[in-house]
Image (tube, rainbow, N blue to C red; front, side, top):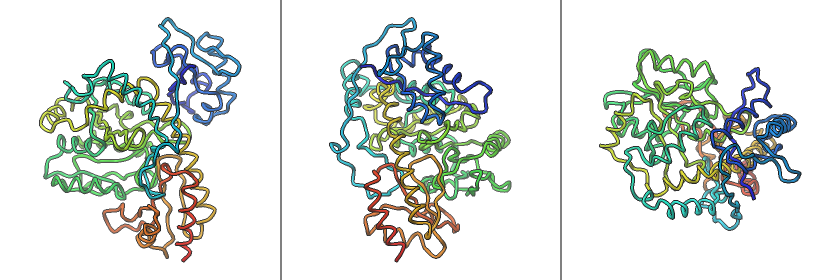
Length: 465
């Protein structure tokens, strides 16, 4: 049985090139680059049409064109497979799924935000990747001569961000980290002195505030509007800013192109640094992926933080930091003094997992499942909670915000919800100042509709009282 392809690309609806031809060109390019292996099965026409939000006939037209050109071979009932293009055909392995009920869910309260569903994780495929590394490169599990981490994993990350985030970076610009917090810590140690300041979003991810204060760095608050985080005030210029342009946390909005350009101009004019926290960028459910700010800036004044916690596992504590070429030597000095904190053992295995395509098959599977759960939660909130507040549906991420009416207090609601076993968080606790935000941050990715339904019913009764 042939493997299914980790087909990765974005379509440009503003381009004059027809969408079907964009699909053709991407498959041709990936076939010649070796990303797509001969004999591999490309996604079904309905599947790809759904992921790209295009008509199925558009995908059928593209596939039939590639059949005519000799890139694909179609067989009734078997889909489309890639033909050999001057390379050795590799044997395919059978993909085996683990039933959800056979994997225990971690002790999570329903509706807790930002939690991946580890019951969906392809444990058997991960075990095979580990076994292959143990059999062929066992020393890579324990030894690493690279200050920035395992080279094979950094090469896999470079390919990943090129396809998913439009970032052109070499492996030498990538540092494997022990998660996103570790990556931010490395940035601060390299770029910021104790008497300097850093701009952070408010509302935003409050542990960043705590990290800054622990290092004697003064936070500068960046207000958030419909275009994203506002630029620092002219009289209070920080050395760097930490922002979430692709999916603002916790409000969920996307930074406008105009605001992105303004930040790049700010960084160039002030000789400042932009630290882009792209914590859940892979989970975008409508249209083509939004390119990272680091891609717009061509990694000139922007440092990019990514994490595997939301896609892969929140227990391995693996992330990565991509830095401008001008910062490679300063970062290396920091790492020599600070040390590599990411665990060595899973790095080579994760590289193999990505190289085999199992990582992308898992990603496509959970994106589909999470999107179904997001739609369910939005529908339930709009149907049964409209008298208590409003929800703004951003088709991205792993959580959403339900804005409460003024006669309800989010802290009181959350406290009572916790007593009922409902893991909601408050919007007001995401602010460092006395801002007038009042709402509940609700997660959907870690829970099936059946698991959410009972908690939503209890939450509805609580709000009614």
